[in-house]
Length: 507
Image (cartoon, rainbow, N blue to C red; front, side, top):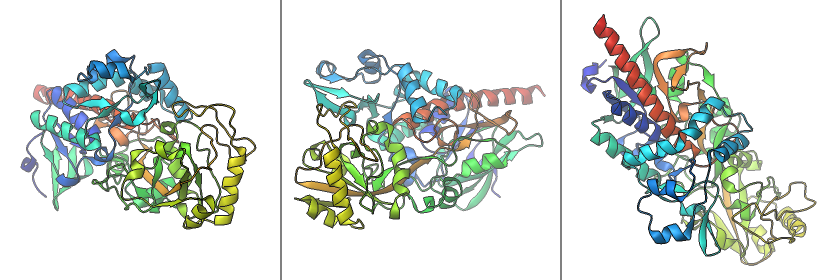
């Protein structure tokens, strides 16, 4: 056992090294606490899932003047040619309700939405730079129209976010100890948290602190926990991000008496390159995703469509369709497009690491779809083409109502016949981003025990928090959640540490 002094002394220990952990550490330091961060990954792989994201943030804003506070480098020309619209809090609340089947925890959702813009300004002051989210635009009437409430992305994406937050931590004097995994919470006889036990580069250490913030991710990188909680087949799903989010923080909290909370059998999962590696590849980032399916169709091994590709704009469906793909025979699907829609495909379809086929006829195409019944697939495409209506114009910027008629599985928007060569198809499977189950927290980000009481000295943020997302989620709200509740958890932990120090001094 190594003495705690090897790590210096701290008022607050933050377990984790991604966005939520950094926000908690910066907030606690801002409140005057001495902070120590413990990151399980080696430095070159650090940053949790945050480093693998595209860096998109969802937040409420009233118009261009709000966005100019976050993006002060916007030129006059950009202000005139970019149509950001607005995303009021009411719309954010509605999106959180719709996507979660109205299961989202009302207290946590209220905090997420009402603190969203304020938190974005705080991140900007900490050195995080934002730029327009051009990946969520279409050109309409000479202007680039942003849609779905996603106006901003971090400059440099996920890696840029982690770099900016690590720089802010360094400037604030917050040490980050890499290759160090917390394994247990240290509790006093009254069950108050007094620090953590950890394994650091092969040594077991005990580190004392007055408060601990758990911000070390969900359990998506644990095949055992995926199978236990998500169900059969999930153990072989691919993981989009870090291999270090194995549920250790959730396990520690539950063993200490925390209340489990949220959708343990649910997760954020997307259509992901069929032959991607088992875990995320930092050189590729999030480009293994394949999210242009609303403009084409998806077929399974039986050659059948299995989902309404046009149920909504993709930022409201992409996070749940991975699980639908996983349920298909052999856990894969092909996305099919024709010459009319190929120009609309996102940049992720143009990377080198894709499983792709092209053809000049549908007969040739279905014969190239490995693992698919070609005769059945051709019949399915022909039936889809007959069912696609043409009673209104195609409009990729809105739910255009261009739908099929008479099919068992309709396509509710953007339904145009797949009839114009050349044709392209891309093979996808399920990629797990993060899990929805976690621990119950209070409005102050205190972890609650099974009786609903705050556990003294224990706080949580990020993917550790259960109750926000059920079944699905609106794009960009994950990073926002990490920042909002990380900031709250850090401030609460620092206040607890001050109170504990004062009580000790008085005694």
